[in-house]
Length: 253
Length: 321
Ligand SMILES: Nc1ncnc2c1ncn2[C@@H]1O[C@H](COP(=O)(O)OP(=O)(O)OP(=O)(O)O)[C@@H](O)[C@H]1O
Ligand SMILES: [Mg+2]
Image (cartoon, rainbow over all chains, first blue to last red):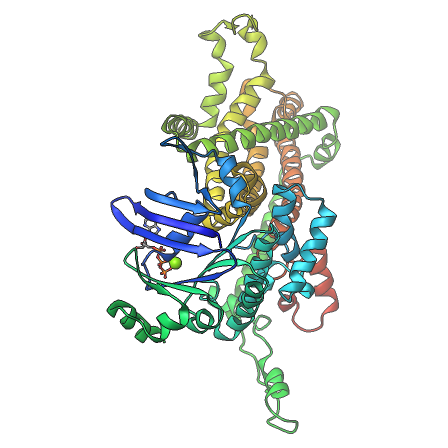
């Protein structure tokens, strides 16, 4: 099995504050990789490093065998041009806690936008595909609605469809359900479960321990910018080895 | 008194009937039939205002005004031409202002300290001096630069270059750019950063993100003040009188001073200004409505929809809006 994401000693600082202090981990192709940890532990930051929304300060980060954000020639690193970074981001879908749908476009236009603008897909093809994706997330009847006319759960499912429209090989989820009312969480998790079954490689930052246990293949507990504990979700969640993991889990479970 | 006005009975929802309909089974408590509060203060103020209006109207009817001159001169060809020039110079100056304003806004937001300081300096100067002074500066440019010499490209007498039209266009347009820059900057900053992030995460370039995602959303913030700027421009353009550009005020005043109908011709000018600003206000309403799409659950009604709703709804006309 090849690693879809590989992190070696990843460091990231904002000014003087070191947020990631050497992250090492591997995400295999086709697996659902869950990241948990207390607020401020650097989960979002690490996720954003994966598609180069943040630049790392030290270490190496690979996606599908290629260095993120740089090109290595000999022992020198060259920064990639914006257009090259954009090219790599096409293959990585991202779903945000706050959805970030484009409010001036309808649901179907949101899903079509990137294929048409980035991949120069024909509008009719993109529309057809967008309708298929909306159907897949159970929202074909809401295609013409603007985001403001959708519930939070519906918006998040549109956001997932929007990311899928680029046919990514990797999907990043940053607490996709934590801005949702409890009764809307299930619909979004169902879509994610579906996606996992279809074989998509997923990195999921989540507080949904039930989802992590059922769907997750690996789980990492982060605290203070380091990986404290990792393993199979069932093992880590039921039998944590470290004190910090134990105290965190006792609070959230 | 404002308190009274706000609480007009038309605004309060008809809570009695709805309540009995939804939560109480038939045969429940009877609907409320109360005697409404009498607004004596409102009646008294209405009488006073109407009386003042009547007095004003009477004063004008008795004044030494040749109303027929107003009517005769309203569509005089030089007046119509002047109005056309006012519209032309306002539109052109506004175009200069908007384009240069967007450029200045992007420059101010850029990470390059040189470009952002240059933009800051421009805005500082053109907002900090009166537009009337700026117009006169352009008009008198020939005093310090008798010849405009752009090396091999262009060379001409300054007085030939700085025609009244050019003075008006540069004076109004460059001044407007400073204001538009601030409006555009505020609009760009008002768009949530998550939007840029989502677009980038989808693989969109900076330019596409700006054009497809950020600017359309910024427009919602930019359009209303820009409309106000244009209405201001229609009126401020009367200042180009000073650089001898023959716009509405200048052409009406010319007739006024030769025919001893000064006030009458000022009325004519006012009517034209009012007509132009009113027509534009309607246009602005539809423009704002277009850029508001998606921002609220339903679009605000158009004027015609409002009228229709008012005509065909019984009961509270204000509630229907
Ligand atoms: N752009 C930034 N500039 C400065 N500090 C930042 C920035 N982004 C994040 N941080 C800091 O980095 C730390 C980690 O943030 P991060 O968002 O990665 O945490 P998290 O684990 O996702 O937390 P949460 O569960 O609350 O989302 C926090 O202390 C935060 O204040
Ligand atoms: Mg986070």
